[in-house]
Length: 168
Image 1 (cartoon, rainbow, N blue to C red):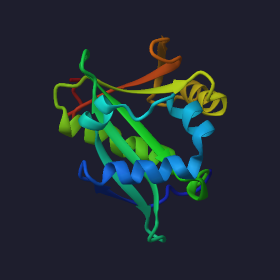
Image 2: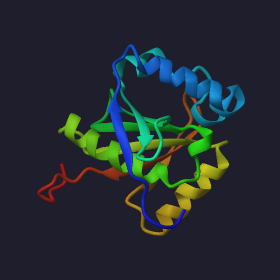
Image 3: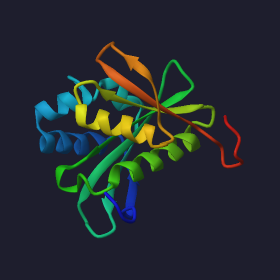
């Protein structure tokens, strides 16, 4: 997408409302796409108990078009970012706006965190190609390797820089 970034609104969800939104998202994508994008059995109970989830709407639409979440890494000074965009709202420039919001919310909610991370499944080839291309073009998201357990993901990370310009 070229042009100005979309104006989006973010609404924090309670842990009671988040499963409803994620179920609607899974139904909209279908089981094959959900498995390719997030892995089998997602969201896990651990993720649901640790994530802060937002529903996201566009300024010009009353319908929820996406969701985003931050989840602290239990073993690292990092926060995982996860997002999903409903099919009618895909390819409209939302992904980068949502990731930017989630990155700064992670920094606010988890002040000791040093990085934010995203994992892209190896078989989600289009998104993985896009992420590598953006990294080569100077994106703040840097490829940092992969993990193979429990699923095959390629990892991208971004340093958290506090508002005073200091790295955490």
